[in-house]
Image 1: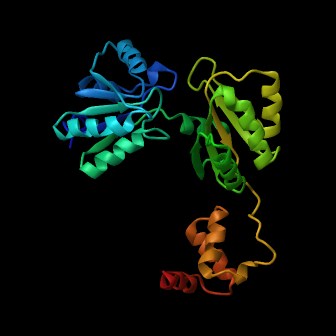
Image 2 (image 1 turned 60 degrees about the vertical axis):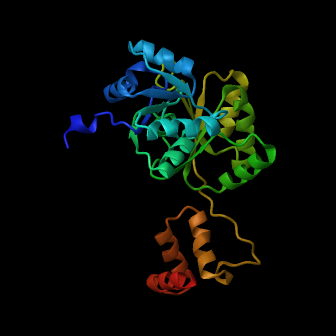
Length: 290
């Protein structure tokens, strides 16, 4: 199949189109072609998307699709796709369906048998991770922390032992409080990169510790949307002295090391060594338990 055939807009298909996170030049030629040729565009905010289209001399029918209307609007969009129309889903900035109600629309399409494809491009979380200077081989995306205090407390407790690099989003008016809460949960010396105004003229990457970040934003007002890249924990999770590892069931022993951040086979290897077993023997035992 030629690249021209691959780029042809197909009726009855949902296109996930990434849009610029700050620099209009980052809208790819393929994204421009897709937006210009689909039947209609589902947008987080139709006003912002209309401005984006106008910047490229495009006009296209727009429907709103956001967190507050997704339950009603999602089935309507799927119905139009089933009738043969094509739709581009966009957010105000970045990749749709990532920490975004677009994930619900993709799930609806999958259930209805509607083809979904991606027109990749900008993603603030990955951009910030690459710029952070922190380990990138293994990471997890957390998005915005929960607003509910109880849920947030539970999430922070879980993140305290997370061994992977963590990606979080935060708004400027909540940044100071979030930094204090992270400091209390993860410790003042935890490394963090605070990334703001990505791809824009005033792009800024502050690489420091949580304590240093609090000091900086006590003296300076937070401005712009932030992506926080947090270093993972280097400490092994604590196990109660009354529950030594060898007293755990084999599956729980392996799960302990997986929660510490090890890949499953590495966790099996370590647990097998501590139990004086061959790795393959423990692997078979785990499958027998299933």
